[in-house]
Image (cartoon, rainbow, N blue to C red; front, top):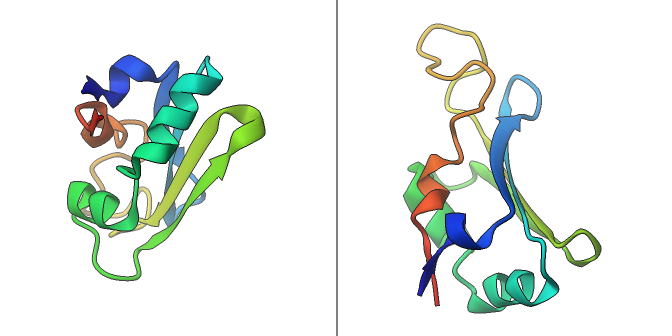
Length: 103
């Protein structure tokens, strides 16, 4: 098993507007991308658990074969820049994915 952070070429997060966060995962090799996708580890239950999301907060998990990339988008619990927001730019939200183990 390998950590996702060790398999991905790029693992990042960012705002997708003031109410959404997007997680991007890109791979440099097709085989590695396919390994992660076929593992089934990146699914609704896993993302909800890692990010403590309530039902309906996950917008989707999107697989882009031609780009060797995966995009995960979810609703923020508070809008960007409001009281209680701990990451205005959404730039630190990829951290829970880093230690995710891929068989």
